[in-house]
Amino acid sequence: MPSIRNPEVLVVGAGPVGLLSALALTERGVRVEVLDKEPCTAARSYALALHPRTLEILDEAGLASTLIAKGWRVETLGVYDDVGLRAKLDLGLLSSRFPFVLVVPQSELESTLQERLQAKGVEVKWNHRVSGLHVSNSSASVTVDKLEDATSGYAVIPTERDVVESSSTEARFVVGADGHRSVVRKALGISFDSRGDAELYAVVEFDLEEGPGHEMRVIFRDSAKSALWALGQHRCRWSFQLDSTEALDSRFKSRLAVRFREETLPHIAGDFLRQIVGTRAPWYRPEMVGVDWCTIVQFERRLARKFGRENVWLAGDAAHLTGPIGVQSMNLGLLEAYELATRMARILREDAPASLLAEYGRERLLDWHMLLSGDEGVSATDDADAWVAKHRGRFLDCLPASGEELTKLLQQVGLRPF
View (cartoon, rainbow, N blue to C red):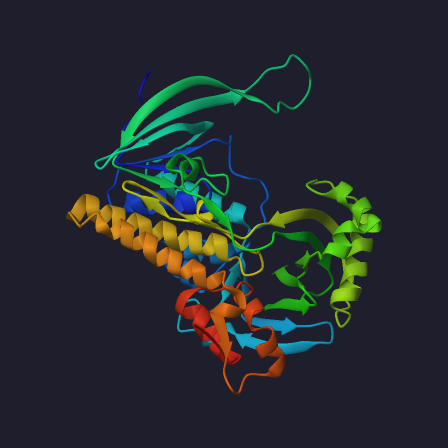
């Protein structure tokens, strides 16, 4: 089999996590190859916000100002129920160079990262997937298939893809950033354990006369959560977790026909939006101009048993999944990508011990065990509001932060992680 250029680090997956890991390695003088089985980046995706710590990392790569110019700042977070405001958190109190959350489409983040990589001479190999992986103490041997759309002879969009060539390569390290169906994780034999029930969300984007400004709004109602994000001065996104009654309701089922469509049916989406907002947030009365996109998305809560072994390590959705409201899976994935790249570069360039990678795995597992622990991961202080104390576990995956920033936000409402 012909061999592709042998890199020092092979990055599998060209989403935000894979692209950032490749960029961080490249800037440290490490030779990198990036593969992705898809033909190009995604046109639309759910993730839409960057945490303060993420912006600090992106600033080190000289990208924060570019993204900030394209985005919308969230400076406060209001937590509501169907009656009204119950708690307010001020992101401006965080000791960060970027004391806000930046709302910016994942597609913008990906294109910004890819352009910077291209400027440094690194091109993503699209339509390439890993089909074999063998790990030793000194390197990883990888089999890569080149794909192309299968031709059927009919004027239809192809749904199957052919392998047109297989190649082999050796790399000192492999970064598995290939998402929740990770081939890398499966090749390592690492289980991807469920950490709770899957959550079904209806997501609606719309224009309106006046948005919620620079506040993100999270709504707790019974067992369901919702979030209202401002995408700009006159544009918003609602994400509604559907409870079992809503998911099975025949009236709601009729609306599933508009899911995953770029050309939705505005009148159906608009009727649905008004109906569900009236139930979840009756205090909110937006003057909607028009609804132009809606979808149904299922989010699982999973955690890999390990983050890797020997020369192959995971980052991002390949290792963890959680609910969407705090945008934690992508943001922690970006932090993981940066940390993993830093450690691999130290091993390659500074002769640092390989134990740095095992340490990475242990630390990341501790982070995620806490984030996925619900009520067991957070306690209320004596001066916490009774409503906040009752819902304490629900705050963990709804706050757009992690680590010390998450702790400081929790402290604003009388909560603390264990």
